[in-house]
Length: 210
View 1 (tube, helix red, strand yellow):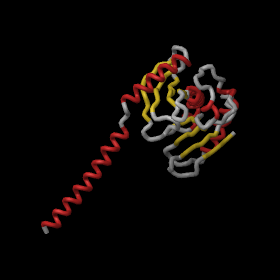
View 2: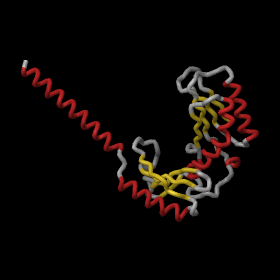
View 3: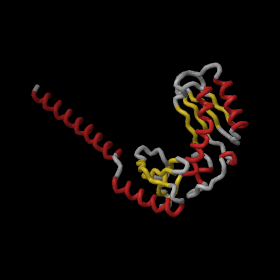
View 4: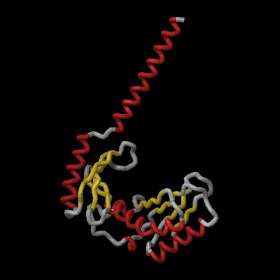
């Protein structure tokens, strides 16, 4: 009996040690490196001074510990004080060159601001509305530039997703068609991929492209 108890305690100790090691490793991995944060801020400061005018200001850093972004691990968060656009400046892992996503962030904010009131009138209390230009060729253009084309002049198709925490309703299809007409005729946006996503609440998602 004593031997059995001893082995049970040893096994439990080993299990707890492994769990503790995993937890500590996870915490370490999730914690940003202060030196790397300061390094990316310093490089970003030089970058915005050489590429932009004085309206840009670094306000924080981003540590991509979950691998959500391609091409970098650390980035400086920067805000354009004239437009309130927040964007990232980072060192590209592939080339070592500094880059930014100002154009993408600018167009995403612009389209969101243009259409959000109409969306909230048609779809009562959407859970979230997201705009994505990152998957278009805009992501590879206008690096280090603020003098960029008007959003209505872009020949790209961003995604616009309305996330709903309810099931699909019979009027949603018609609401989506009306929203497409607003985007085309009132807002003059050349192309959009529009999706109403019900977040697994029931009913087929609505997808419209033009």
